[in-house]
Image (cartoon, rainbow, N blue to C red; front, side):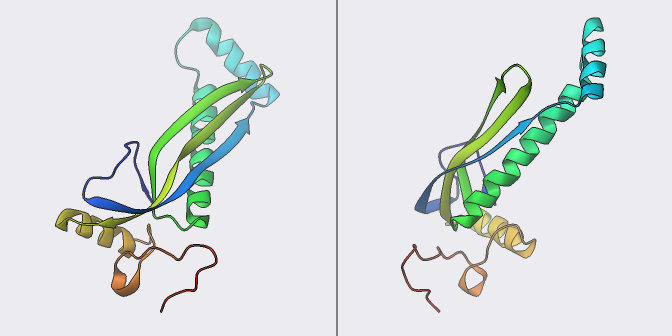
Length: 143
């Protein structure tokens, strides 16, 4: 999946916008970890337990974002962002969101990048190994 924080993708043309997609997770620390994190925060500096919580939340939210984009038939997510918040003073919410799209390479560099990603299994191939937007719901598959 090509994922960018920009609204466009240099070297590619957007052939289909498939809508907003997001992935959400809500995380909490267990009692022991919460106690340790609270104790560490007294001295100042980084709190590794909280860093791990944030990283796990972001990774889980990203995985869900990618799953939703693939489910819609996208090969790219544009304008990807993270949003975080606290719920009831006890839980940490992480939301990853963006615009699912089908993009096609139009420059030699983009074609090479896309071909390498297809070979690595990171993006779906189209006919003859090149991109091809999937049909919209209700449209027949083309051979």
